Length: 389
Image (cartoon, rainbow, N blue to C red; front, side, top):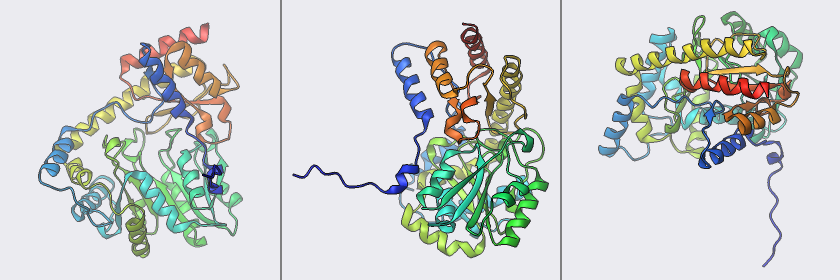
């Protein structure tokens, strides 16, 4: 039998590993050995899915809702999502322009699969969520990572887009609030970028996964325009990470092609998860979610000044999400090694900046404030001992 291995696709060269997963694996190994580890590395709240959603999922299973839905999702859920845009954000979105997807990842893959191909370019911020650039690469397009810093609130500006745009530019991707920085883009700047994209015939994709977790300022959705691709998810605000459910609001002209893509890529999102998500918009559920949101804000307001006092530079107060992107260059010029040492010596797991791009990555770490306040206080005590050692 031949021992020659088949070649893998060249695109795989550009798919970097999630370094945080190695941190997580190491943390779990330490836990298995009896160590107490404080997990501030994974972008997942510690809260359980609200009970009304869980009960709706159980009821759906018992009722036999275990067959495929249409590729675009349950009509009732698409209508409920449209209703949420109307009541929460005063935006009119036709339910016919909504695709229910397996997580926000499914929505991003649909949008980039539709818009980007070989030779095309997609502009996005660095630092930013790494899967964005990897999705572009998976479509054989080129992710153009534009360095951003505190001067722009770690968000793209129209001027930065104009400097980096070429005839090959097919899409601009904005995330607001963003991962890893938690910062949002202003409504005025987003409108400027939208108008430029519209005039240039460039698609605008806006990741609003954390929009409902905005603590400061207004929540403003790009879905107020009907020519934008808007990605959202049931994972973060709705606390349904493991249910793997998201959605994409897209221009009407794109829907036939998106439906074909969905049919071929994943057939449909999980049917029980879709039925469960119908309960996500009930008043009882929303009350619970707003309570959880207030808890997350309290965690931010506790951890942010504490890290600043200890010498971590966080020049922009994040308006949302549940992350602090901290400059640790006072302590190290290698944040990847710093994260490993912090875990090994102090039992605190954080994410190195290398996961989020290249721009100043070696001097940043991300703290996810996804643990209760007493655990955050303990993390600070351990951090103090580590820094003073």
